[in-house]
Amino acid sequence: MTDLTIKNNTPIQEAVSDEMMGFVEQIRKASDDLKEINLGRFGLGAWSISKLKVLQKCPFQFYLKYVLKIKVPENLAVKSDPLSANVGSAAHRILEFVMKGKSIQDSYALTKKEFVPDKLTGENWVELVETLFMSISNFKDRMDSFSRLNPVKRIFTEMRMGVNKDWEACAFFDDDVYFRGIIDLALQLENNDLIIIGHCSHYSVLGSDYGTLPVYHHVDEFEQGK
Picture 1 (cartoon, one colour):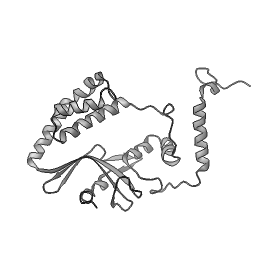
Picture 2 (tube, rainbow, N blue to C red):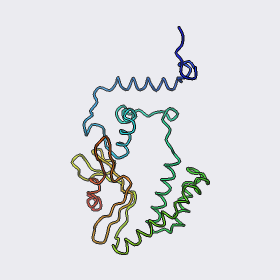
Picture 3 (cartoon, helix red, strand yellow):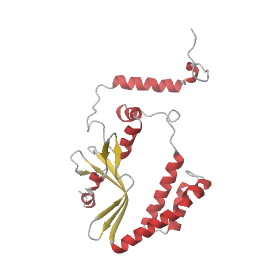
Picture 4 (cartoon, rainbow, N blue to C red):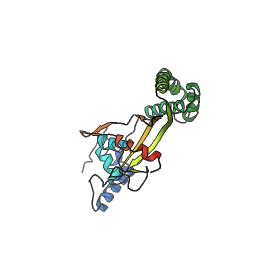
């Protein structure tokens, strides 16, 4: 019998590694062992913006990760773009330091120690992060102007929050947490108004609108320790 071949004329049994076939077998076994799938709103654990993004980007990956709970081997996973992610994380970190009162220069220096060379090369840093200096400076100027007109009592960065299925406040990792959100930046004004700045405050998935604002509604309860 003639072997089936793929585009480069390599026999399929040679192109498919033992590790890949082992992973396929792991999927088969996990599927067989899955007695019942609860696909209701509350049946798949806590939701978050990132989890919704996985569902939109690749439903099969969502099935593996959140239904079968199988981790894809690193060498078999679809490769992401770590450079873009690390540049974004570095910019985010610089802004955190700035909002905590550090100068822009000090914020850059502290962040560089965290990211170079472990996550970014020196060349990456110069070309992709240092070039953001003007944007970060403009952001700081605008925030300073806002603060002069609206006195700020407290500043929160990377504030983790959660709500249960009744939209009541709970801890980020509580067993009954239904939706999790992280506030990138929140300013509590002297009059107790809360100004929220975040890149995930709104997201559209599968034709429906989702957001973390219902979670943020409970900031005052978290502040009071409820």
